[in-house]
Length: 261
Length: 289
Image 1 (cartoon, rainbow over the protein chains, first blue to last red):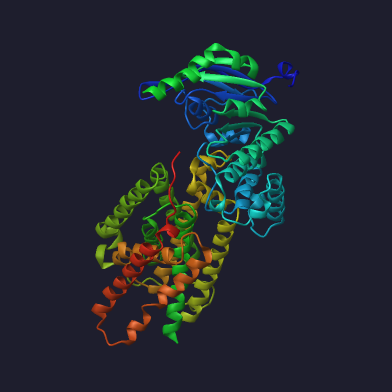
Image 2 (cartoon, rainbow over the protein chains, first blue to last red):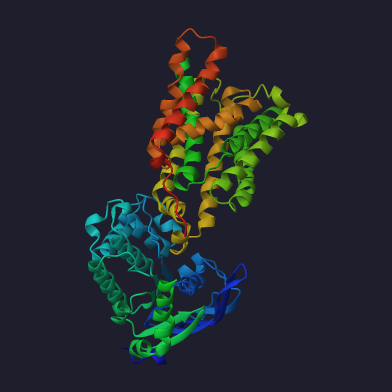
């Protein structure tokens, strides 16, 4: 969609990333460059290392070897919260929302992280009121404003996804790592998630999204990466990737094998 | 009347102590069982400095806070590397080290005999041997601590603490340094405990290791659990309620040797039933990545 992409500097560049747990190697030298404003779909069979790859990018797993550069800064050894402050927004596969808090508090927590602690130190300060109204505006974008004061645990799975993504936006992330945002979400809600991803695209955010549903991500991704056994085996435009026989073999072929087992 | 003032002073001291426990425990889910040990560090520091060296009130309070904060940095530095239940076990280990020191380091703490003759504070010309004046002092400290904790519970610190308690990766992904937040709540709680300990030593004029036993820890835990962990007003009210609750027992004709154990039994029963009936409210379901 965006022909200027190649002229831009890569926002994220990953070089020969290796990761293993207890002798089992999960990632075997991932190499990729993600450009600013791109929307990249990441697909691959179960256990191929997609989530581990995201964990390495967001700092929840420390790679054994390799280098990760984000906005030109080496972040390979950085703890997760520092990477987040640089602008990496992670959305978890199994809901990272805080269910004990109210919906609006989830967003306020994110907004508060952006600024110095002392600004929202006093609960009766004006900054707190400002943060609250800003959080309300963010909730309005995804239609959750009516549930602002309700406990987050009362939301449906799809609404929690929306909340988590909008929370990352409120936090001010530039690179969104969405780990299966439509897992366990109703078809109607899937549309809402897609709408929200388009909203992120409009704000010129860089998005990486793990998905199993190829038809779903084709709608908004301009590039698709296929991961298999810890390596990027295919990388290109959706049409090209879809036609590639390798995809049929590793993705659908493996699924077929699993069924026969 | 003096009896009534006595109860109010106890309420002030215990509100400070319980609120200091409530911040890391209630908001941050840090089960700090060394809280009373830190409280005893405050009490012993004040007792020793004022009886042996004749240090004044402000000197004692400041040194108590400093020592308790140092102790909490020590406990926190080691125990906060552990998570969940293991953290609780780590703090129990620390608490038993402190209590062993208090009982066995006889040349310093006089062991189980305790330290008698702690003078009342000496601020200006006010006579703090009058309990009503001491109540005013304790009340001022209680209000100051309450204001601080009200702020902590309701500002970004409290929210971050609650966030990390629920889902550490979630909080980290929003740029929160969960380690620093936990450490902060821990030190804030310990500071409150040392102030409470200092006031306690000044008020009772005598301390011994039995005042800082596991029973005391259970009492503080009961206050926090009854008041709903993490609830600022809940814990404030439950402190008042639980201090006053066993008092009617005094007016029944029971020998003092039975009265003490009866109070403990009462608290233990309350703790048990609240945890039994309200466990989902008190300890929400934990999650993993």
